Amino acid sequence: MNDDAALEADLRRAILVHDPPPATTVRAAEAAFAVRSVDAELALLTFDSHAAAGAVRTSAVRDRLLTFTAGTVSVDIELRYEGQARIIGRLDGSGRTRVDVRTPDHTVTVTTDDLGRFSVDSLGKGPYSLRCHLSPDIVTEWFS
Image (cartoon, rainbow, N blue to C red; front, side, top):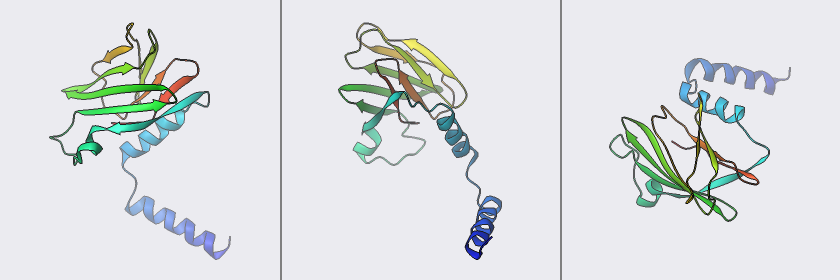
């Protein structure tokens, strides 16, 4: 092992002992890796009400509006915290479509109505990601 490799190994050990990553961050990273989808198109975040309003994330400002876009398809989401997390969403122009709402611990599957609307209650802790079963499938970035 050369000097650079030994120094890198020492620094990694020191960080893990003195400043480890938060457990929630590790869980989110593991969940993202576990449910990655090479056969789906990634829908990117194109609107975030917190960013648009310049809001600082505090416990007082929790509800959030998000829009994800993949090609011509958009997914509008309202993330509410009413005791537990709740997602109200609309998949633009899809008609009836199956949507998986994913967390690091479980997946809840719903079907949109004829206008592409859906909702999921009592989700538990995030982060969250959606998989919309279209052709091809669309997967959102993780959000919370």
